[in-house]
Image (cartoon, rainbow, N blue to C red):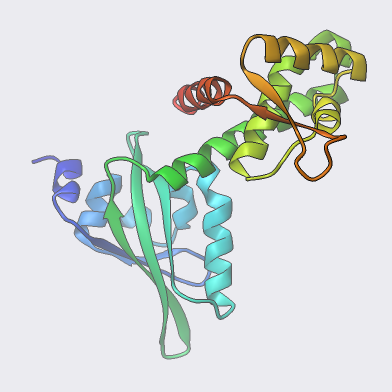
Length: 229
C-alpha cells in the first residue's frame, strides 16, 4: 500500500496549526497524504500546501475563528508533493494550551467535491478570467484584444452563480465593448440559444438577461476543463 492509499484508507486524519496557520503537528496519515516528510511540514503554513484558489477563503475562515467565531468546515484542495490535487473537508476548531491557541483540523479525504463547492470554484474561475481579460486594457488597446461575446457570457455566469440578476445595459457595459457592439453581441448570443432576454416582472420597461440552460452548461464545462490545465 503506497502513501496515498494508506492515507485514503483512513476516514479521518488530523493536523494541528498555530495562530499563523503554521503546522505544529500532524498524524502519520496526514503526512502520508501530502507525501512530504514531517520535517518539511512542521513550521510551514498550511496554506503553502493548499490550492491557490482556496487560500483566501481558508485564511478568512481561520481569521474569523481566531476572532471568536464558531468552529467551521471547509472543503478545499491540498496540493501533494507530486503535484496532484487532493479534495478534503476540514472540520476546524480552536482550543488553548496554556497561553497558546491552536487550531485543530479533522481532515476527511473526498473522492469528488460537493456541488456547492464546485459552484464556488467555477464562479471564482470565471471571475479570475474576467479580471485577467480586463487587466489587458491597461497594456493594450481594447479593440485589439477585446472578446465581448465571451466576456458577456463570463459575466452572466458569475451573476448566475452569485444569484444576482443582470439587466441588458449593465451586461453590455460589463463586456467592455462599445454599447452598440455589445448589443449586437447580445443579439448574436440570443440567436444562438446561449443567452435569453426576459421582461423584469417588477418593472417591465427593463429587460433581464441570463444564460440559457445550454449557455450555462457550455460555460460550466469550459471552466471545469480550464481548471484542470
